[in-house]
Length: 621
View 1 (cartoon, rainbow, N blue to C red):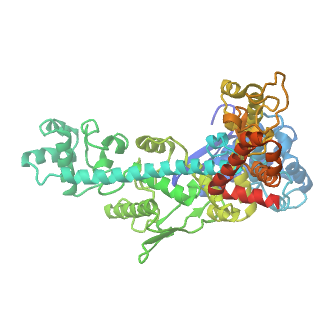
View 2 (cartoon, rainbow, N blue to C red):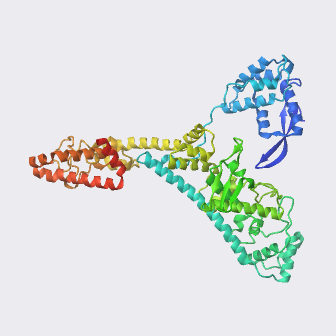
């Protein structure tokens, strides 16, 4: 016990991905009298933890909450249970958040502290001063305070919010293309890992010798199966990397393999430095041991397990925890169709994920599941896991008899570096799949089914915080660019745009002066180069195609500009004879080129964008 402090040690466990280790948390109870409600609750919690250890996360937050609570909250927790009535307990619960007001914590943290103090009171003696039950009061009275809504961390790539586009449809197409490119890069990395694994197995088979020299085999076996007293024998054998690797593989395949309690083979291997030039040895090492490379034909190395995990996450759009919770029981095979059906568990909502069918046509995912099941069967054959084990994620690590995390940040970084792909987190895959599903189908229900949500409102919120946020961001930036580009373009033309790093695609053509032939005029107060006017005058808008065209003319195709062009054609259809007889020379030099230009433009639009032509035509009627 620390001098000057009274400590209570509560048993707990610390766990990660199925691995649990016993631990204790010390809570200082110096400020809580022995008969106080806080002290008695902590003593009860300590007693119960000796039977079933409590959550480390909750106890850690409880320790901090007891440290930071202030004001009347301290007075309440210091009071004996016999002096607390039900109404006083209710008043305390209702105003608990304010007892952390003097701290610098954010509102969500204060709410968390209030929640764990409420959990602590469940261990207090049950009877209040007026005979009411503590636990029944806690169940019946739920404060109206709600945890403030957290801003969702947007996992959609930032570049989506900076896409340059013409309209919403163009933005959606470019966003979909960018997201597909990212998924394709991930699939290429997975395929690279599978192809490399197949190459390593073929390579090992090719260097496997038919026989080994008897003396060399004796020396090598003594070095492999004994302690370091036989290190001098290693200098007597042929240490050429390929020859050495082949001989060790030969001995490994012909020997009875024994394993330690942690699952490591009782079998010495040379370091990867001794095997320089042998492909993938360095990439497959674990804890500086080359054992995973030599066991490649017997079980999967960690990079391949990581590739399988990534592929399943990309294909299913499950949460990372759901992929990690996948078991052999959740995988069924339809042998007639050669099709897998997989389902996992969602710990967040305590239910199952949607079923995912994986036909043979989904080549990478189908192969990933096949390899994962093969790896589990091999581990059972080697005796590393029990015959009735259902879990799947057993890799190389400190304890190979327990599941590993195949997708921690270090393994992911090495995995993507080996494939030359930009590093990213697996949390990005789920929103990317949801975004692609919505952009391709425009159906929120399809996204809801994909993500396994119960309510459409949850899916709508998910999309608003991810892909919709990025699309809105791109639209806002486009609007800002258009305002700046249009002002600069009207004032200084292309040269002004180039000075600020923009181009004519950023100009808001709809805000320019329409010329009636499918385009706009960038300088309506300027005249055609052939004009003799010295003073700026409004342009008549009919000389755009005269003598090779006007430099201020800018083609802009939209339903509105096409509609105006169609109305111009109707005008000429009704008035061309009058225009011709009034001034035949001007008709041939000005009106006829303009009419022919409009005709060619409408023909091109008819071939390439018939939807725009139909919309413009419908407006006329």
